Each structure stands twice: as structure tokens, then as C-alpha cells.
Amino acid sequence: MSATGQTIIRAGRLIDGVGSEPRSDVALRLEGGRIAAVERWRENLAEGVTVHDYSTQTVLPGLVDAHCHLTLLGAGFAYEEIGFADEFMAVAAVHNAQVMLRSGVTTLRDNGARHGIMFAVREAMNRGLVLGPRMLIAGRPVTPSGGHFHWCGGVADGAEEIRRQIRRLVHEGADHIKIMASGGGTAGTNPGLPSYDATELRSAVEAAHHYGRLTTAHCRATGAIANAVEAGLDCIEHAEFNEPGDLIEHVAEGPGHRAGWDDDVARRLADSGMFASLTLPGSGYVAFRELCERRDREGPDALSSEEHAAIDRGRAMMEGRADHVRRFLALGMLTRLVISSDAGPFDIEFGKLYQGLEVGVAGGMSPMQAIQACTRVSAETCGVLDHVGTLEPGKQADLLIVGANPLDDVRNLREAVAVFKAGELVVRDEGGSR
Ligand SMILES: [Zn+2]
Image 1 (spheres, rainbow, N blue to C red):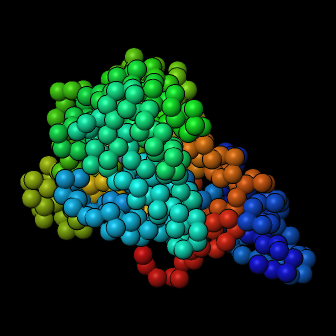
Image 2: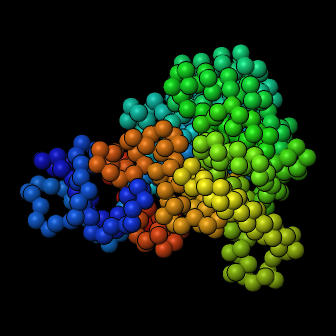
């Protein structure tokens, strides 16, 4: 901090997240960790002003990832294979939060972890013991007996137990409530089947809103989306249209994803005003990309017939997800579509949110719209747009700086040159590879 307390960020290109055209050669004037002004760059600065010069680079808002699970490893484990102690998961969460920060995520929402682990991790970060992004924590997801993520300890059956679980979560420090409205990747649950009825979900919304907490529901089943719309949730996660009879496997070569769709339920979702947090690209993407790269490098003959089949499945899965983006856009949901990572489960790695943006663009979003889906729109979904998500006077100076223009290719977001949180340089690229 300089003597005058003023810092200037010089941006060769500024993407403010508000949606306006990118501006060139801009100065962001920071004061006390916030943006005081966004103005044209001038050479003659007052004495003692600290300048960070990114005149050949792009400055954009720090990313807001509305869905991740920091206590998991993103290393290919099924939930049933995770035998780690809570203490280990807390350490893993700190590590993963820092991977996220280095990738440009300055705000994240953890959508479910075992017991009270994430409350402790957030406490350590808020006290400055360890560095990390701003954190919004759900704690234990609310789920029925034997339901998705039941191993976190948030089991509640029926409206009364749901209300009690939410009171406990709020008392322990939950920033928002995550409820499992359908089955998922937890063994013994069915991602095509709703796990709560609309009355139960409504009791969750009422209890959470009573305490001023937002709600979001895991919805991989068509019936779960319909219930969530009826119950008035604030947001749904995944927004997949699976039916009870669908066979959905989670395997390393990519899940057997069926790109289902229900026009009537999708229209009700679009009319409801709810946000949809699309967890793109989902599990299987890393393995799919690696196989494609190996085929391009070594030639098609180097791959076995199983591997070629896995590429075909992976491509179908990606096209299915991009098609959903296209359909949601056609229903007018652009300003309520969020792109989130869901990092942690299975092989979904931390720090790769740009991969979701690739799918968004494949589904018809412009790069600018895809960037907004994980900055301004996701901040609004998480209830924090008043202080993060865009670069405007009064907002926190949470910034991501990248070298090449992400409006040319969203993959240019994959390497951060620098990251600022509340005006403080927390990540600087040392030129090494990550
Ligand atoms: Zn999740």
C-alpha cells in the first residue's frame, strides 16, 4: 500500500462483467480494497500511487464458482471409496481452495461437505490463518435417509426434520441451504428419481428464508425440477432431465449420460425466475479430452476399440450438455444461467472452470455471456452481487488478469497472470507452468 493509500490497476483490456463492450487502456483506481473509480488511463499520476501495469493483458472480475465440494479430491474416487477422516478433508479443502484461487476464482460456494468441516475451514480463512477465496458454505446438504450425500450427516425426512436440520445448519454458520431434491452419484440413489416432494422442499425454503438464507437444490431428475419450481427454490443445480428408468453410470471413461429434456418442465423453470446452475462439463470430461489428445498425437490406430467407443460417448455427452444450454437460451434463461464447476466429485478437477465455459460457448453463448455466467450472474445467484461479480465503483477489487483475450477463446482463461482479492495481489504468475 502506498503512502496515499491509492493503487491503480492499468488494464490493456477491461471486461467489467456488466456486459458492456470491453474497454481499452483503462485505470481501475482502488481504495481500501474496493474499486473507487474506473477511468481512462493517464500517464501523469500523483506521487506515491502504486501502479500494477497490465497494459498488454485483460482484466476481468474474479470468477464466482457457485458449486464446488472442496473436501473432495477430484481424483476419480466414487463417494463410496472416500474413506478419509474429517481432519484430512479439512486439509484437502484448504489445498483445493487455493488451487481455485490460483485459477482466478475469488468467490466460491461449497455445496456440501461432511459434518462441520467447511465451517472450520471458512473460519481459518476469515481469520487469515490461510489464504483462500471468499467462501459461502452450505455445510451438510439436507438429504433423506440413504439419499445423495447422506454420508455428510445432514439426513432429514419429512418437513419437520428438514426444518430442524436447517435450524441447526444456520446455527452452525450455513450461508445458504443445499437440499438434495433427487438422487445422484451416491450408490443406492437414483438420479432419475425425486427424493423429496414439493411440500418437503417448500418447508426447506420457508425455514431457510426465515433466516435470510438462499436455497439451492440438487436436481438431476425431471420430477425434482418440477418439485423445486413448485416449492419456490432460489436456484437448482445440474438441471438434468433424467427419468427413473434411465441407466446412469459414473465411470472413468465418462458417465452414461442421457441428454433428456422435458419441454413442459423446462418452460415452468424458465417462467419461475429461478436460477439454474449448470455444472458443466461434468465428470468424464478430463478422460474424454485426454483420449482425444492422445488420438490426435499418436493417430487413431494407437487407440483400442474401447477407447474409440469412449470418445464417441464423451462427444455425445458434451453435445448433449451443449444442447441443453441451447434450449435454455431459447427459453430466455440467459440472465439466470450460471456456469459452475461442481469440482470435487469423481474426476472433476479444481481450477478448471474454463472447461464449463467451453461447453457454454458450444451451446451458443458468446464468450462474453459465458464469462458473465460465472461472474455477474453467479454472484447474483449466490446473493453477493452487491459486492463482487462485476468491476464497478464500490465493489470489492477482486480481479483476474489473463494474457490472451478470453473473448477470442474462453480457453484463454486457463492461465491466470495475476489474481487480486480485495485489492491485494494474492496470486502472481512466476512464469512457471502449473
Ligand atoms: Zn455437487
